[in-house]
Length: 363
Ligand SMILES: *[C@@H]1O[C@H](CO)[C@@H](O)[C@H](O)[C@H]1NC(C)=O
Ligand SMILES: *[C@@H]1O[C@H](CO)[C@@H](O)[C@H](O)[C@H]1NC(C)=O
Ligand SMILES: *[C@@H]1O[C@H](CO)[C@@H](O)[C@H](O)[C@H]1NC(C)=O
Image 1 (tube, rainbow, N blue to C red):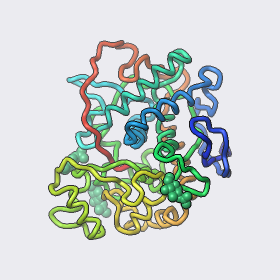
Image 2: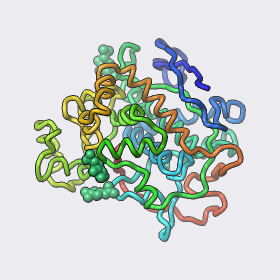
Image 3: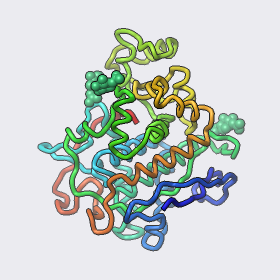
């Protein structure tokens, strides 16, 4: 059942992906039942262009949204499967998933952006595309567009560019969101050790290589002080480079300083393999990052990705496609939401809730 797909470095003039220089094949994971590579090709042929254009414009004013959208997709898939439950507004008596982790909540603007894209897609195609599919495409395009936005220099030999990969589509939206306890049980935290991370990923049928590859999403985005200051105070984590620690103490003079710092100290904005080079230099930000270098079960994979960016890209794509198919609803299951924040049967009766500021989690 393994399908082979061409995997491209996109060097076209955005947004029309017209030319490629380097292409190679590798096997992608099998499709989940009910998903397809061409699901909307007749019902919404412009879907991918609409998503990409909208993101391109949004990223021009707030490039931090890219990491935020990857984070939303990860949270969505790890908690109850990729069925858009993370997008649902909660109520005061039953808080939504976005409220569940006070330290790790999601970026409101990114959630709003998914709804804006949904609305534009509906104007173009009718109500045929699920919020969970839009969130999945938005995560892929965040990886694709990130660097493209910041620079028009996009040479094929310059691997600080973006990544394009095909996304299976046909997800339907779920009807319920998870309780706080379910969210806590399913999402690894920045404080997790490798054993906890491996167990968490294994419970989703994601293997150790998926764990290391998907952690590479920390090649962009930011971390907030409370997520790593336990490694600085009262004493420096012995697995952290001392000069790196000194700089972090300037950023975070107190454990709960409201500041943030790039997850990838070398190339904060590029989608590249420098995250793994950081780990080899004891400059991973979170316990959940640096642990990957320190543990014998993951170190070899870190070494490989640190020296072979292609290997990282390839395994990142495999990991994203696997993760993006976790617990999907297809066929007649679930629904196509009218609004991403509200399930259809309760209409507009739930008011929108104020969301917490952005924080990050382990992956
Ligand atoms: C790669 O692109 C970046 C900007 O995106 C530029 O600063 C850098 O010089 C380029 N490197 C090469 C080898 O072209
Ligand atoms: C990893 O973390 C878990 C949960 O906090 C803990 O029970 C376990 O002892 C830790 N394992 C190691 C090897 O530190
Ligand atoms: C939130 O951060 C604090 C430290 O600032 C930590 O003690 C607590 O365990 C964190 N909670 C979660 C759910 O990660």
